[in-house]
Length: 417
Image 1: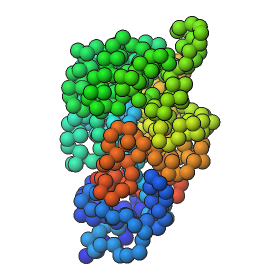
Image 2: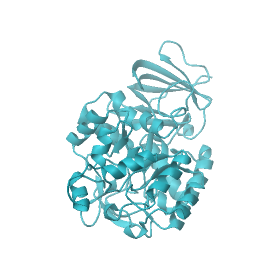
Image 3: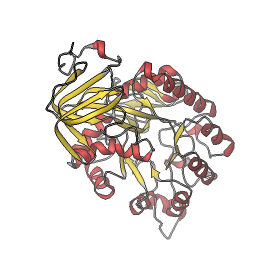
């Protein structure tokens, strides 16, 4: 028998959650495509792939489970390239249980592809984190949650004066003996290093040979150091305006004449991309407008940079490893270090999308692209994820008219909300 249409919300049949269906149909929605909108869209998902996308008009297949989007949006699943934790856990806790908790938390906020991100920490902690991510990645057809596409090796190679809320004792300069072991796991797909550090060039060249998306972050690099890194394969700067060099900070480091910084290098070099934390706490609306206007949706990514405080009550938490990490206070909106500085975000990607849309009033396809297709393109997974296209994985979101997540499907499987 053909299933009856199912309304969205708490009444959704829990028996469908994490149970693969041969065929799922999403109808009564406007589809958000890379090059436009498709009103009255009808998506057919079969065997974990997008099998058909068209305007409504014909009956759903008899074997289909039907989702009525109630006039909302259907969107590609979000891709988060910079995320540390959520649901009370941090990837650096280094256990499969912690990794599963973070992946499940961010799936509820629309992230279907995730790149678990390291902080500073000991080599043993970094290796434990990578090993735990591999275990969960290999079992995800069973456990559900956001799919792990690779690890973002973020810490520990930060500049001493740009560590931010990360544990300062776990910061160090890169050495081939250490970073080669991380790359040797085969799981590192995004690699970050401060461009001015001794050994940064060797790190970037190794990451380039490994086919990684290479970034510069937590850095006080000059234009010249950025250009040297670019020649070695670096193409991205982490969280724009946060823990990065400025003309003033370069002058304090190098004196006069004043020199260009990471900001100017990104804005001037069309080969560079960057990202913003659009949680409404890190950057003001005019900065979000500025970034979108000057960089556009093909060079600007949305990230969460989220901590373990996502979906947790206000209180004190650890950033990074549960034992050796640094304390921060979650006020219900954002994390703050004891000295008053920001300490990562406390919200999911759906919040970033809504905030960026409200701040810029950019077309919805631009906003969604920055959270899906652009990060997928930059990380080399756009052939499988990041947009609604026939043949791609059925990583699909149903959003309300106000961009609230109402359903999440990863590989065609409905996730628990």
